[in-house]
Image 1 (cartoon, rainbow, N blue to C red):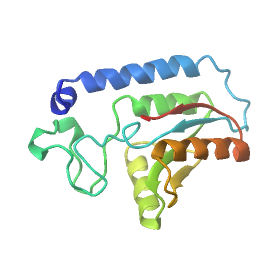
Image 2 (cartoon, one colour):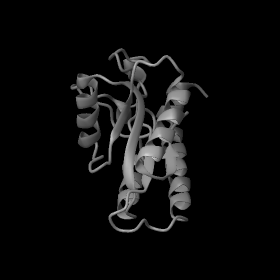
Image 3 (cartoon, helix red, strand yellow):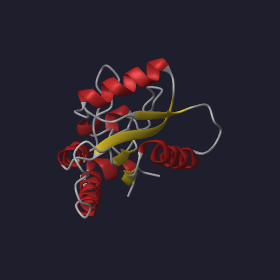
Image 4 (tube, helix red, strand yellow):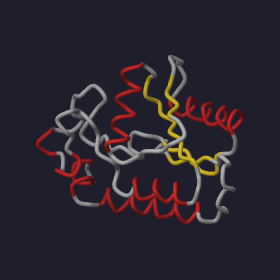
Length: 166
C-alpha cells in the first residue's frame, strides 16, 4: 500500500484511533494520581498528536500537494492538524488527573517553541505540564527522547506512559 493510499483510504485514521484506544485501556489500569501530585503521561508531537502527512517542518510538502487527502491539508498559517483520536485521548489523560507533557525532537529556538505552543493550543492541546525540545546534540531522535524522558522522571516524577512514533 503506498503512502498516499494509506492516508486517503481511511486506514491511517483507523490505525491511529486503534492505537489510542489501546493506550486508553493501558492508562485505565493505573489508579488516578492523588490530587495535587504530578504523574506524567508523555507525548511526542509530530505524527503522534500533530499530523505531518504531506508536510515538512520546512514548509515543503512531503507528498504531492494535489494528492494529500483534505483531512490533512495544512492551514494557510502553516500549522499542522491534529492526529485523529489524539485530542480525545489527551482529554482522557487530563480527566484522569495525569499531567500531560510533550517531548519532541523539534529543535529548541524561541520561534520554534512559540510556534509549537500556538499549534498545540489551536488544536485543543492546552493545560499541559511542559514542552521539552531538542538542543543541538547530535544523537538520534530516539536516543534524545529516551534521555529526555529519563531526565524528566528523575527531576519531576514518574511518567506512566509515553506515546510516540519512534
